[in-house]
Amino acid sequence: MTRLRNGLEAALVPQPFEVYGGERTAELEPAAVADGLGYELVGTIGGYRMSFRTEVAKAVRFDRVLGSRVGYGQHEDKDMALRVLSAGSLIAVAPGARVFHNIAPGKRANGFSYGFFQILNYLYICKKVFPPRSRAVRVTRRYLRYKTFLYWIRRFDEFDREVHRGAAAALGEFDAITGAAPSQLAERYAQVCDRHL
Image 1 (cartoon, rainbow, N blue to C red):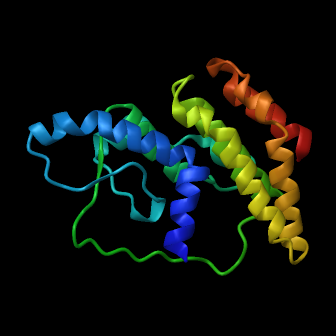
Image 2: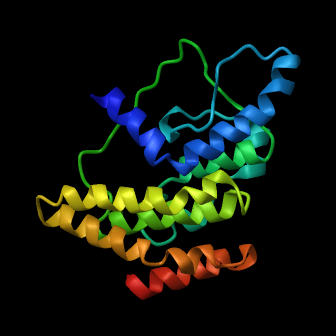
């Protein structure tokens, strides 16, 4: 069922991070293969799997804006991966690598903040990284509406209702974020946060 759902979602509501990551990887891959790269490539990577060359990580760095209001950076891993691709590097799979992902049992934020920053940080990254008229930009609004809808259908307790409320509030700021000039994006992000938190 998961495979079927993933296929349907990829066709109907593709994830902008995956769209951009896949397209950028396809652009960069031929030159890398010609240079002898033999590893499988991916368009994005989760933080618990990350390992970057020092010079790449130092050049790109994590974006402090993403964790500036909630205490930890939601989507900071995907943001860094997308900016690594944007800067011209690739993300390869390390065959046989093993990872231990220690997950703390508690919640990282209250429900409203969690939902709010899931959407706002995703939107901020899309605006910051994607070329203005790219396919990834075109699918962003639909995807974030869908993500907010998924939060709506799982409102079984107070925390989940607050997650949906936060996501809906951030989605309501879509035009405010996408309408910001690149030089004003961090300031606009702060203004949006001040309106809701």
